[in-house]
Length: 170
Image (cartoon, rainbow, N blue to C red; front, side, top):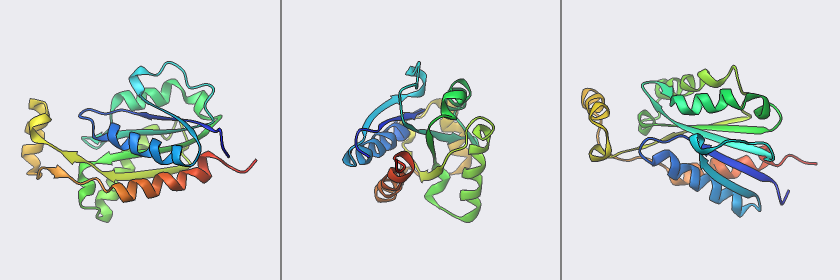
């Protein structure tokens, strides 16, 4: 349905999740949706949108606190619109059943406040020189390799499937 107004809201520490949010928005725009993209900390209202996609990276097994706070703050509005969520986890560079289960568990913190119609789980990017000192120390303990492990085709495919969720038949 042309003219649907969608918000892609994201939390991001180092830009990887923002870039994924922008890629999702581009796919939705190609499907004739009007799409805004914004960081959750910059959003003061969501009324007026027909649907929303919310994303956050996973740090220490959890969504970023600002993403969880966003969902809590707007929970009554979120119950009135189509919602999809996505999580970006560096561990998903190796999408084992355990890693996928852990990524899905990270989303559990928002389940009391919102009931997403779809969930996307994606691998992220790690550039050690961009990390804060504490984050670099955590990564060093896990012996993670640097790299961009995002699968843009997988992200675009998931975003394309959102059309039926975000634009249900009239």
